[in-house]
Image 1 (tube, helix red, strand yellow):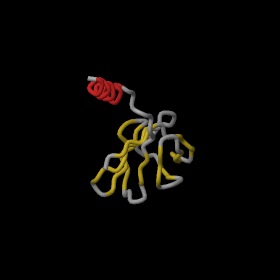
Image 2 (image 1 turned 30 degrees about the vertical axis):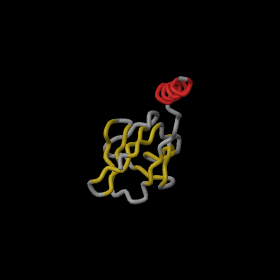
Image 3 (image 1 turned 90 degrees about the vertical axis):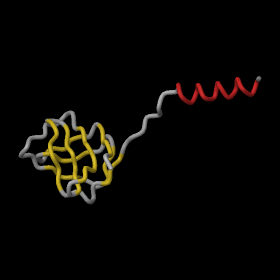
Image 4 (image 1 turned 120 degrees about the vertical axis):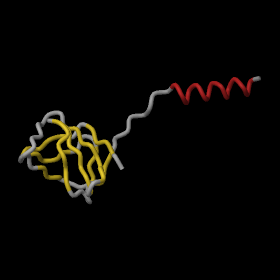
Length: 96
């Protein structure tokens, strides 16, 4: 009986505990193009394969914007350069 209760409690703790916060990181060293999804979101592609979605809440991305990566391996809270302005990534969502 005791073993069943411990097993049940273990499963409950496992399934009901909040997910640990983890930063997504993406390797964009092979990207060939980027597409503006909205004013604050960019999709990076390798050919026609989506690599990552980057959300930049404090910088506006225009269709004519110039984007430069400071480093190819980007994570949440890293910086990129949009139209010669340093911008912080809020979230990086890996799509591959």
